Image 1: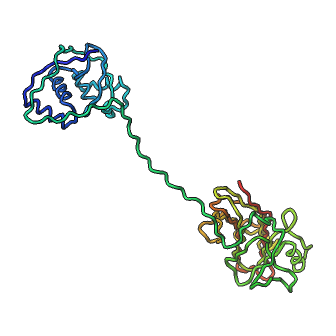
Image 2: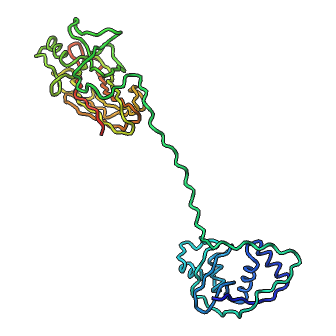
Amino acid sequence: MPQMNFAVDIDNNAFQNAASRAQREGKTIENILSEFVADYAGPVSAGSPISSGQTVTYTIQRGDTLSKIAARFYGDSSQYRLIQQANNIADPSVIYVGQSLVIPNVTGTSPTPAPVVSQPAPSTPSPAPTAPPSTATPQPIPPISPAPQPQPQPQPATPTGDVNSSFLNGDFDTFQPYLRDGQPLVWKEDRFPEEYGQHWKLKVLDQGKGRLHLMSSAVFGRFAQAYFGGGGLNYAYGGGNSQVIASRYEYDLVFRQTMAAQAGKKYRFGGLIVSFYKGTDNPATPDKIFKTLGIDPTGGDDPKSQTVIWGERDSTDHAWLNPSIEAVAQANAITVFVRIENKEKDVGETELNLVHLDKFTFEAV
């Protein structure tokens, strides 16, 4: 469609005001004069073909808003919603210089074609016209997301003891001597060697005025037969041997074993434990002998470390317990603990508190 132009005469002061406003708002003098004409001659747009009731296009200039554009074309700024809806604009405040808009239902009288507006010679140099806006539609700049922070990686464990390639002797079927000052201990006239499970580490956290005794269930069976009568029973769960802890006095001890593990993988540790307060001939008495399992997912070997995860502290008596605990390895080694706490300070000369450990397992889950 042909471009419609018309001529107006303006004095030098009006031109200078228009030039100053164009420089201030980043527009061309033609834009300013067109807006001036729109204010006095009705709803027209410079360079836009207008005929009654038709749809026209308009390129957004610097400083435009939908309200200003509506006032220019309709003579009513509140009609901006017509332009917003026609162009599927979600937020009327988000428009861009150079963006092409469809202006629907434009009415009004088209001016008579005439030469381009004449400009009197200014008394001072006119500011250079700004470059025409780009016709490309700019895209909104997406918000800057923070750079991802590196996640801490599990560090290799550095236990002070040995690290087994896998879990060993969970059945307590093989044993090693229980040493004191480098010498093997033997109970009762050198007849009953004291020992505890091979591949396990032992730490006595607290001990009363008398020492505790560690034996295989086979050795303890012979001891019980010699001093308490009976048939010398090897008391274990489902055959084989079990670890026996016997004591007249209070104690707090921990068995532990450290194995190679895969960081980030979950493991489960569990087994069978039974206690007999004052031996097997007396009634079950809870809250005397406490049994607890623990895991250090960092592979540390200190049972008092804050990294150890402890399970339920159970004092059930005269019944096999089957506790278990799970944890995700945080390093290339993981340590499991079996803690036994005997709270009775002294059960007397003719009694013994007994604990049996058997059938322990360690597996990935």
